[in-house]
Image 1: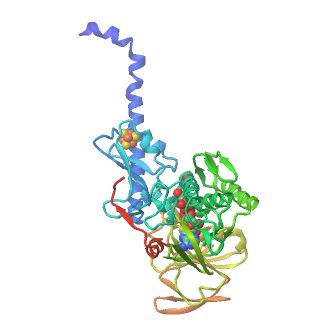
Image 2 (image 1 turned 180 degrees about the vertical axis):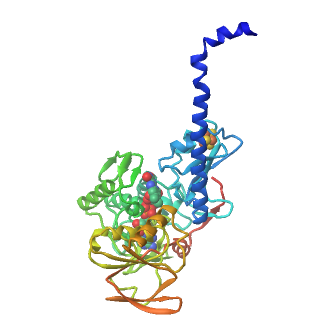
Length: 438
Ligand SMILES: Cc1cc2nc3c(=O)[nH]c(=O)nc-3n(C[C@H](O)[C@H](O)[C@H](O)COP(=O)(O)OP(=O)(O)OC[C@H]3O[C@@H](n4cnc5c(N)ncnc54)[C@H](O)[C@@H]3O)c2cc1C
Ligand code: SF4
């Protein structure tokens, strides 16, 4: 036996670092798993445990815990390792890039819609994006497939099909009404102009759809896409502000017809003609393209005075409220982020009002920042408080049965969204509900 020692000693310089490397790897792995467990538990506590769209499911029998998927996801720590297996630890942050599936060396990942407990409605459409209602087309995320490049491509293809419908080109009605000016609706609007269709786009908010609402300076990961009348957009990684600026420039240069701040309430069809009813009027049209995404329309509170121009449903640029008295209503991340952004503006007096006693729907990091801002007295937080009336120079609030008035210039309501199900129902579109299937 001792005769083996001399040759083994020759390998000592190589063998000694091995246990050290293994120990370092084990510590790093343990720390990463601790972070993943904490992220999953925070997501569950905040009720953010359901993925909004296409997402991975991991087969634990095939997963070897290599972690390739966790590094591949462009959105950051959406996937993590727990007990040596990959898991979706921030489900609500998954937007369906699918990079994890491509990265997995063992085929352990499938991409699916919905979960066992929450169904995911997908409208039935033909390969040309026509729904079960003839003449009504659906493009973009509403059709199930997320991501900017997919939305652009689908918007363009749907309009190509619409251009071939019979009855296009009549003077007594529109050829096409496009609903939504996110990436799908914007590409469709350009394609319609390119084909010289008599078309109009109705957008309840502003150009860019969900992209306009990403956090400030978010890096957008996207595939190259072809924008009609513009050409190929080759960005792969770009700040959201840069991407929006390009789209705004294209909209200006082409003079594409988009009516902003106009919300569509219903779509009905009779004798092959659609009637689209919006907040500002009604439109008779041969075809409709629904490109409304899945984020829905902002939830209103239904209180007197909500129609005043000082009431908004998103923050936009916080600097425009410098020196104003702003009330933010809501308890989720968007409300907390709005209040904290406003608190950075010189002279802005910010009050955050929430109907519950805690902010359990917000992420721990947002809650921590709010607590610090409250302690520093730069945000006044009113818990268990509801807004009852909005007036031009004040708001009326109620806290545990006690009514009081607060002087106020601007109200920003961040109360979530109403999903587009009602719009689909009014149009009579057939949908399929998926519970964790492709
Ligand atoms: C936080 C986050 C990060 C993301 N990051 C990326 C990324 O890096 N890369 C990527 O490719 N994708 C990303 N996505 C996904 C991508 O933004 C969406 O898939 C894409 O915006 C879908 O485009 P869309 O045109 O179908 O819908 P949307 O962008 O949602 O646009 C729909 C438009 O319709 C309007 N609308 C809705 N209802 C009505 C109505 N009744 N009347 C009038 N107008 C209406 C809305 O106001 C909105 O402007 C991200 C998503 C989120 C939430
Ligand atoms: S890439 Fe595949 S095998 Fe590796 S951790 Fe992710 S799911 Fe498991």
